[in-house]
Amino acid sequence: MQGTQSLERAIQLLRLFDDERPNWTLADLIDETGLKKTTVFRMLTALKNEGLLEHNSSTGMWGLGSELILLGGRAMRQHRLRDIANSHMRKLSRLTGESVTLDVLWVDEDQTPFTMVIDEAIGRHLLGLTQYIGTRLPAHATSTGKVLLAFQDDEELADLNFDKMIELTDDTLNQKADLLTQLSNIRTSGYATTRHELEVGIAGIAAPIFDLNGDIIAGISIAGPTSRISPEKLESYAPILLETAEQISIQIGHQATQSHK
Image (cartoon, rainbow, N blue to C red; front, side):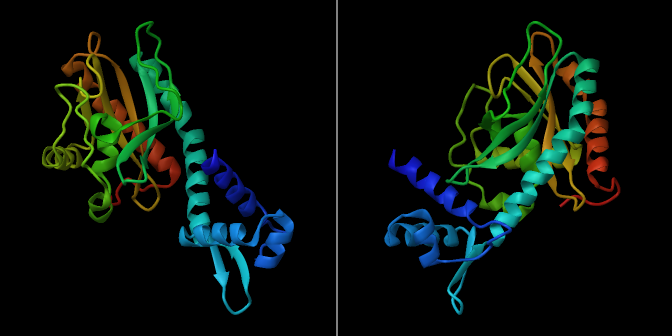
């Protein structure tokens, strides 16, 4: 496919900018890739517009952009986050018997928010919930999604698109005003719960994980079937879940006394 080929070429172009040769001219990139001048220039322009490359107009040299630093930092934090969180997740799963997931916020090209699973500890029950790593779910219908939204900065929250709040079940919130009200309550309680919102028969509870700057970087959740997890039982998980989330946050560098953005 044409789109896939363009993406592969762009990635190959970015990989040319290494430690041995961090800067390239347009002519050198054309020679190195063997692509047409118009193709290379189009890719360079697109990557520059996204902040992935920078162009020095006085020297004519191209180099990696600041956006790649940001993306690299996120990747490093998430890798470290998984390493730190995994043992806590497995302990929480053993204590509750239910599946535990670690999710981050993922936003599509329309600015619609989703959660993305980056790690999971499977529960011990035969009947349980399994979400494979990389699974993306509508943020408005999941406990981790609501936690991740609730603790965003007001400006970041305002930039998100809530026009596609799909009503997955009769209990799914599908109005932005109702969601915002719920997010305000979540900020007060410190955790979020869902029941029959993503899918009939599924309940979940989630708590936020904060980094050293007080920014939310992930949500940790306990989830399972409503046939086993009553509303009261779900709420009973809150103290241990909040304690686990705080322990992970502290190991990442968060100070428990600092305010959350």
